[in-house]
Structure formats: structure tokens, C-alpha cells
Length: 322
Image 1 (spheres, rainbow, N blue to C red):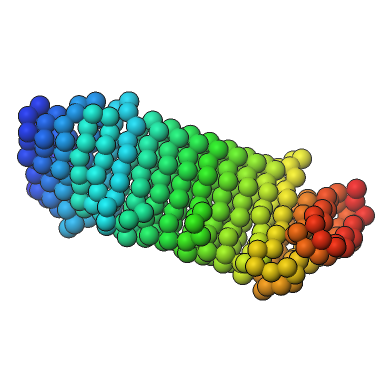
Image 2 (cartoon, rainbow, N blue to C red):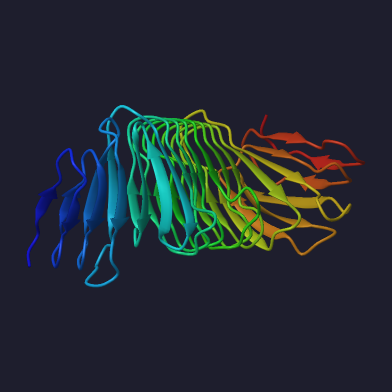
């Protein structure tokens, strides 16, 4: 009983942590590592070879069991079901069960948890990482680097960190996600749920997808892509000196175009004419219409604003600004 620090040697070891929050290293050899009860950490060195069988356990947990990968090599992790899967990390390989969390290396790492229905925590660290989450509520942090973070169908929390990241639900899965782009010029899409998206610093491209979303651009010149197949979105462009934030509309399921009405400087509302898609916006300096006939009325705005009709027979009414 207790929080133990346990390690094997160069042979084939069997290590059992028992009760408590244990730190376990297998090192080289073909090792069986069983954390027992508690929130256990299994450290895998990418340069020490060997093959570990890791058993996290399912009782006495608060935050869950995790694998920490250490070394100069990238890691490939595949979940085959639930909290079970396998990994390849430099010269080290292994399999695992009962694992809820991963801490990856500073290299380019890959995690495929698309076959899992368990909630996972992933800290990707530095490097250009590709993380494909499970169908449950995942928490994924990209860290530094140009990462691709895919949340899956659950209510996910995704944070791109520093770098030009690609984040969200690109296959259109449901789930009410919380997404932060972090620093960098990020591409973010929310999927089919009711999402909250923060672009943060940088020139971001943001789409809420389906559902009723709240989209914050943050600092930088951000572009919001709004299609007619959503419910009701709230768009906040963000302030940042001379930044210009754009809302670009397009028809996906109809040909009715969009009606946009400014109620003041940078603020107003919109409604698609062929669907029930509606929304409001603030701190927006530019609007681009759909490929069909649109009506944009900016007569109530005294600020400088750019209006584009795109294709179709459009009616554009400017305000008193430039």
C-alpha cells in the first residue's frame, strides 16, 4: 500500500504496483506491468527496446491511469477498443488495457482512438501531432507544433496550443465541444453539436458546423464560415487594433441565399432564406454572401465595412462608413 516508484531492469520483469498512485517503468525486456488500484503512471522509454504488457486497473481511480512516453522518438498509439490498444515508440513496443491518459513526446506523435468508446486525456506535447479521439468526451491538448486534433462524437475539450493547428470534427460528428485554437493561424470546425469555439490569437478560419454554436475569433483577422445547415449561431469577431474579421455565408442544402441586417457598427443578424439557419454577430468588418441571391443591409453601420455579394443576384446596401 502506498505511492510507489517501481522499475524493472534489463530482463523480463513482472511489476505489480498494488494500492496507491504508482510510477512504474519496465525498461528493457518483455515486461508485465500491473498498476493495481489507484491512479498509476507507466513510463515508456523510446530508446530502451523491449515489449511491455501494461495493465492500468479499474479501481481506486480519481484521474485515471496514464502512459508517459519519454525519449527522442515519435510515438504511434492505436486504441482497439475502450481503454485498450497498442503502441510503437522508437525501439519500444507494447500493449495496454485500462489506460485513460497519454503524455506524448516532443516529436511528431500519432494517436488513433477512433475505435474507442472511452473518454481519454491526451497531452500531445511538442511536435506536429495527429490525434484522433474516441466517441466519448475526450480532453486533448496539442501543445507546441502544427497539430491536427479530431475530437470524435463526444463532448470534447480540444486545445491546439501554439502553432497553426487543424482542430475539430471534420467528419461532422455530434457532440457539444469546447475548442481553443491557441496561438497561431488555426483552422477550426465544430461538427454537428452545440459548440463553443475560441480562435484565440492569430488569423483563424472558424466554422461551427451544425447545431447552435458560439464562435469567438479573438485577436487577429479571423474568417467565419457559416453554412445554411445549422440552427442558430452567435459570432464575436474580436477586437485587436486594425484586424478585419469576415463572415462568409454559403448555401449547402438550399438555394435561397441569406439576408443580413446590420443594427450598428460591426453588429447585426442574419437569416438564411431556404432553411431555419439564423444568427447574430458583433465586431465584424466584412461580409461575403452565398453563391445565390443575397440581401445585405448595412445602412445602420457608420463604421468602415466590406460587402461582397459573390454569385447570384444580390442587393447590397452600404452604411455611412468607407
